Length: 119
Image (cartoon, rainbow, N blue to C red; front, side, top):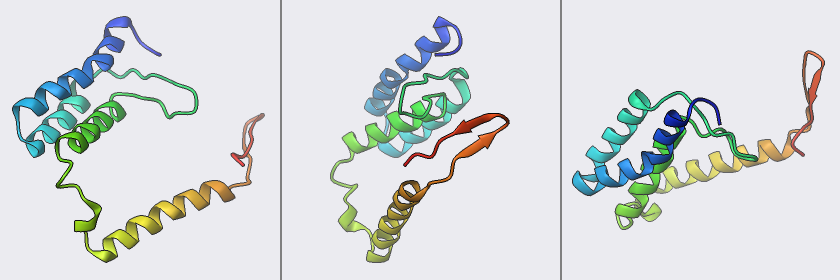
């Protein structure tokens, strides 16, 4: 965790702000407000948890907004409503990312430091 205690507190309290916004506005308007306000007003600090990417001023609003949309709009976010070609593209994209990570055997050398491959 970088930064001072007040900046960290703002990131921790952000999900409560998202809950308040989603309870007062429509889903679309709430999403726009939460993503825009988060990127504009949250401080530039991050939480570095093991095995996870850093949770910072851009990722916390995105994740909390996604979670709020999934909770409030459960019926309208069905994958079955998408056209077949969109479903195929989504599956192929996710499969491609997974296979790229699994097949990555290259170590990264930066200066004198060596970062081993993931697999």
